[in-house]
Length: 338
Image 1 (cartoon, one colour):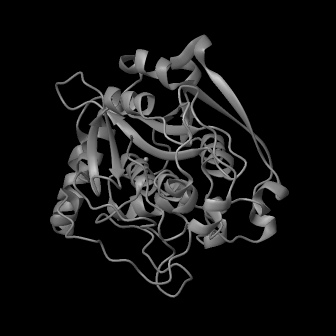
Image 2 (cartoon, rainbow, N blue to C red):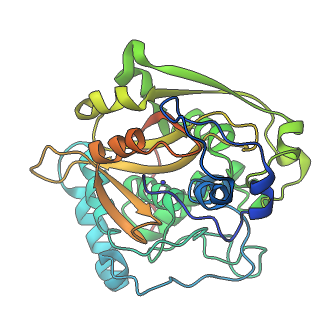
Image 3 (spheres, one colour):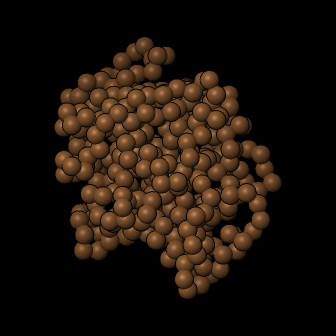
């Protein structure tokens, strides 16, 4: 919705002046020294991809550099054949997640890569394979995992990204904690497995998104929605503390979506600032996070343990509390008529 760790840059949508005057974000318990205030906008800006990446773009965005990922380089007939072949291979769903997402490796990072298409307030395409931010990558991987044809995947992507399939900006699942996760879990696309992995170490944040909090937010102020489209209420979010997630890294199933959970800061309308998919390469055992990284400026694989250790070693101004874990559920959509 939208990612030291692979944080998402938000220069297009973050008001630096607003952040500079905001109350300081929660710091990790280990952090004793308050960073100089002049550094706050830059540090915060690097931590807010999902909560600001859904802002409408003024014009369609081209990839910032040539897209050299495999699925974008091959012609459409070969792409169709590749997807069919990767779906047809035997093995668990997690192996299919790895196979289809492998074709996106190396694609350039582009904040807010998807929109509603030409003639809308956000003219970026509704489906593309040439550029991603962290959320659009995860959404596209879910769609490609669930359908073996690009047109079918595009159709599913609309169902994943929008509430009630309205494909309008105001009906996007903009906010991870209050819209994206609860909506996709309720509809059966995903299942929260945080407690299955974390056991008695699992924690829950009861995130309260009120009208007052939305109006007074300093983060994602450029995300403008009609009042009746802003979700309100208490949204519980399970997470596994970072140190515990590191201890259990080898127990997190391949194919899991990992969401980075930050401390509950009143200036932000969300808790999650980055996400990716955990994969295990064929024949291997090492777990990697496949994610669209604004630091690497492309889709990359990063060792899961390395990512978690970075959150511990460099907690930053807005502390990482832990990770939320979601599994992609098996297909339930009928094949696309050809």
